[in-house]
Length: 320
Length: 320
Image (cartoon, rainbow over all chains, first blue to last red; front, side, top):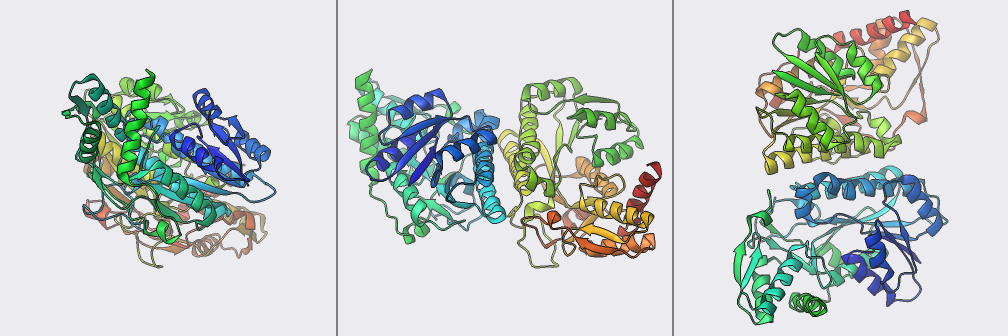
């Protein structure tokens, strides 16, 4: 089978290509949107070739589909930082909703030898802030997105449904919760906190800057997310939406405490108001029941993931 | 007070400027996106000046706000045909969601002498197809948009909420149902059917082409819609959403029968499969209770509107 993976140069793309490189019989074509993505993709295992496209042209995307003839498309390309979406709403909207719509249009016009299936990666942020604390969101719950990022992801999923129902495209949707793991950019909060803890511990200065540590999120190892994506390509229902999550909520503050324990160091936490967002959801926990019923189960315990995240930043610190 | 009205060159813009020209003490600046819109706007009564902007640049929109210093912004600019959205989904998405987001960003950055209020025009299509026949949608009902147009409008409203809650912008939202009246483009079904009936009656050939005439919609006179918009600028609640509708469902088939009676002619209806959409909602009726409770009531009876629509196309036929 031939995979086309958009945004392969990013955090999830690296782990996904690693996972695919371990299985036989797959051809993996990566699509990157920028030179930077191209450089990252060139170093990945298991990637047969890489094409570059800003994804702003349906004609160009259609030509890529005609040339690659993918069986499966995994669409990872996105601006996936909620925080950044408050700084750059229009760019975030374009890099989630519009490029996805271009891909849908290209798929609609594409006449490959076999029909292809698309995995549309959405977000837990689509739920907004509608459930009582400590209960897990289900796929049937209402969506009240409350950040520019969340609105863009909600539109993406709705477009997937319209193209599935209206044009017969074969699409499986996810709502992926907060994925963490080694290699994640420090634009994302857990990776940023881990990096700051490692650097503070190395420098023997206790101060660690942070935003609102009271928010509770459902953290899941990026490698379990990748296993879920490949699982859904084979076993997901057409037109269905799946939460990808652990089912357990953890406060950011607990993660920082665990980082400190691993590093054997006592941080002094200092809140930076610039890191606090205009709106935020206090608690986002998912119910992974539908995904588990489809045959997936997680492999990674949170604590081992946290060790890997710290180890990743330790290795970075050694390099510099 | 100074009004900035985007998309003033369109169907609703013409009726709105007519209504505004009858009241004293208002300055009306129109914003048009194209030369064609500019030509239409130049002929309107009550419009003090017209600026042209594709609305694809936040910087340009910000400069327009700085220059115009509007108290009230009514955002009519849109690709508002559901049928066309199936032909040109990406353009429709851009011309609804993206240009609206650009306007929000410009408003966020704008520092006028007085804070301005924005009317965000949405659509009954946002509801999708979730209610039993014959009951009217309320503003609190779930939204399951099922056309590219409807997804774009839903995203627009969600962005309005995010910018209201997150950045404190003063925005009132509508979900406007099917507005009809003289001057509407025949890209819209009621106007198209009226035109075809007038032309068939004049030519004394009975055949009238149509799509699915069984769909039921909540039709409201465009002049009542304009009155509702001005009413909500003054009396609408910040962050609130209002249905703009009659509360009554009418099948397209009944409208065609009424057109035939007015024209004293017996049409033979012929279905064109090209006019049938990939997905459509059989029944869309709204509940106008919230708008009525805020102090608005309609002035136009459906039958007088239908007479005006036919009269409009008769005048056009005389011109040619």
